[in-house]
Structures are given as structure tokens and as C-alpha cells.
Amino acid sequence: MSRSAHWPPLFRRFNSHQSRQQLFNETRHAPGTYTTTLVNDFGKKVKYTLIVTADDQQIFLPQQKADGLAGPIYFRSYSKFFKRYNAMTELPLGARQFVKQYLQEFAVKLNHKLTPESLTMGIVTDTHDKANANYTYYGVNGLQHVQELNLLDETGILDIKGHLGDAIDGSDQPAISQARLGKIVATLNESKTPFFMVEGNHDANDKYDEKFFHDRPSFTAKTYGNLVYKKLFAQPQIHVVDWQSGLGYFDKGQVRVIFLNTSDVPFLLNADGTKKYDVKLTLAIRQQQIEALVALLQSSSNRRIVICGHANLIDAKGDDALQYNGHAVHELLVAFNHRLKGRLQPQVTNPDFTVNVEFDFSQQQGGQVWAYICGHRHLEAEYKHQGIKYILLNCSALMGPDHQLTTHFNQNWQRKQGTMTEFAGYVIDIDAKTRKINVYGYGAATPERKFNF
Image 1 (spheres, helix red, strand yellow):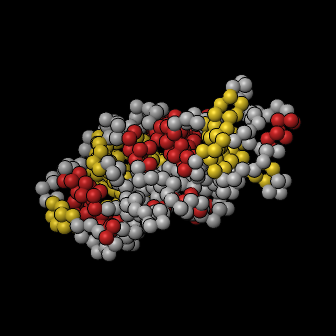
Image 2 (tube, rainbow, N blue to C red; image 1 turned 30 degrees about the vertical axis):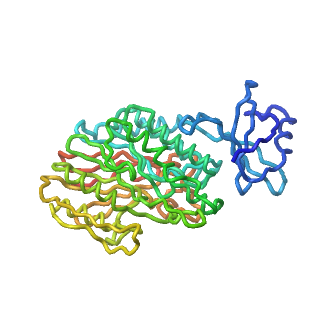
Image 3 (spheres, rainbow, N blue to C red; image 1 turned 90 degrees about the horizontal axis):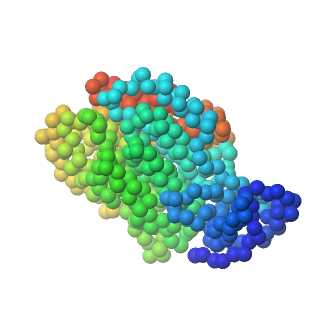
């Protein structure tokens, strides 16, 4: 809902005491969305959408399409002690020079380790981007980490780049979250190198709904697909198998990378208009996606397959790591490797997640699922179960050591903004000829992990 607001001119740089006082003396507004006009350094009036959150934060968002957001974006908080707004901060946009130099040197070191025949991916995950000027935890540097993946892409070593989910934190007002998610997708789509993206459990904005938006969902059933899948599957190099879930794949030589959605949750509303399932808390894979996966695997003879998803299907003990059907899909991958024929019918009592799928892999020749690569856990780990290697990647988002949700893995890195530990990313090289997957980390990531198959 948009309401008109009358605001005095605001400048990117405040050149006088008077303009500062103008800023500080403005009255507080109730939470909501307003239309306002700011005046930039050149005296030009620019229309902005002002978002006032329930905790009195204000974000000024340029009135442009979500995928064309050029900035600048402004942020300010309210000081209850001084009873005034704090200084307006321009949220940083764009890749940084020190990161560019670091990644160029990283790529030079890798170049002699990569072969033209292998499939090389650049990966970030769990960027948890949000419009917040926070210097020790999640914030706008999430977008920067994606922009800086493009710097790695500029070195020419990548065949494809990917984001393994939780692109946004899902805690911003809906218009902001959509704009930030749209900008991340547009950033990945800037170069000729194809990209892929899988949905994370934070990408439905349920974190915001849980805290502020109880009467109805802030994202619709089509929000994520409209922002992500339209660009993802418009790429000729990316093959779509199931539009609804985002299941797709990318091939190079014998290597096939499959993108799996572990936040495959039905968009159902309760009688009061709220969502039946909180996607943030419900990790699942449903019948339609599993049927599409079976069809894709049946056409994957002689492929060396790597599955990329947001959350791990099973844990190190072999137990289900999703709320619904993670272990069942793992068993399906095992059945493919052993060329089995049968029916997948896990014991699920919830009718929204029941699965009854026939499969026949007896005719596939030489295809093999090697590994499952994911994020979600905000740490690094690897374990093997029934011949399939699980490779977990660390979150790109900044996790300072003093926050409650910071994992021990990230506490040990002592991550700080403006240093090489602020971000984390990976180059993953899959070589069908040598039967190896090499994982090279940058930032807060293990420099090198090697796996043989």
C-alpha cells in the first residue's frame, strides 16, 4: 500500500549543519510504504520508495524495476536515546578493488591445475543479502559477494557459475527482498558465462512474515519463479526439466550438473490467509520434482553426475536431513548407480508430501552419480554414504564470531568485514577423465579439497 509523504530535500553528501538538522528533525512514520523524492548532488529530483519497518529502520529504494535496481540505496535507523534518526548511510554496491586483486591472484594459481576438458564451476552459497548497514553480520555485502563472483568469472576459468540458495535473508520488507533477489539474479546474468541458482529455505521471505507480517504471505507462489526462473531458463546452455520446482541441468562432455530444489514446498493458505508451511522451517522434495528427476536420470547414460542443491539430503549418519523425502531421493540416486528397477514409496503420513514413483534404471549404461554439493549448514563437511559423496560448502555471508547463530566453523575463521575472511566462495573442478572432483576455496574456505571416484 503506497501513501504520499512530504519530505524535505535529502542529499547524498550533507554539506551544511542545516541539512543535517533537517534530516534529524523529521518526524517518525508508522511502518509502511511511502513515496518520496530525494535531491541528489546534482540538484536532480529522484523518486524513491521509503520503507519504514516495524523496528523504525528506514530504507530508501529507487523506484525502478527489481532487476534494474541501480542504486544508490539509503538506510538509517532511529535512536531512541537521542529521539532522532541517525545519519543516513549509502548502502555499498559494486565489487571492490582489493577483492578483484585477490581473486585474480587466486585464479592465476588455479589456472595450471584446470584442464580444458573438465567442467569448472564458480560457486557461492548462503549470501543472506539484506538491506542493512551491519558490519559484523548479514547485510548488503551479500550482494557484493555475488558481484565479486563475477570478478572471478572475468578471469575466464569458469564454465558456469552458481548460487546454492539463501540468496537473501528473507527478513526485509517484501519490496526490498524482491528488489535484492532480482538484483542478485541480474548480477549473475551479466556475463556470457551461464549461471544457475537453486532455491534456499530463506528465499521465500518467511523470516519477515514470521516477525512482522502475520495476516498474509509477503511473497506469492510465483514470486521466486518470476524473479529467478525466467532468467535462469532463458539461457540456451541451461536445460529445464521441471519449471515449477526449478529442476534443470547443465552438460559439458561427460559431466552433467543437476540443480535440485530442496525447498519444494506447496503454497497453501490457512483459513486466516497465512501460509500453511513456513518454507524457512520446511525442507522437502515432492512427487512432481521426483518424477522429473527419474526421467532425467533415465536419460543420463554415460554421464558423470553431480547434484547441486541447497540443503543436504541426508546427514553423516545416513539419516534424513530434510523434513520430507531427503533420504528417499538419496535412495533413488543409489538405485541409479546400481541400475535398479522398482518403486519409490517412502512412508510419509502427510498427504502434501507423499511420493509414489516408479523407476527403471536397468537400461542406463555407464551413468553414475558421484557427489551431492550443497550449502545451508554454514560450515564445511564431507561424508560418503552408499557410494555418494556429500560435499558441504561454507556460507558466503559474513558471520562475525560474536553472534549466537555463528557456527563454530565460522567462529574459528574470526571473520571480519573488509578482509579476506568476510566472504567465502569456491571453484569446483569436475574431471570425468581422471575421475576427480577438486574443490578450491577462497576467503573463509578450505583452500583445497580433493575427491576421487
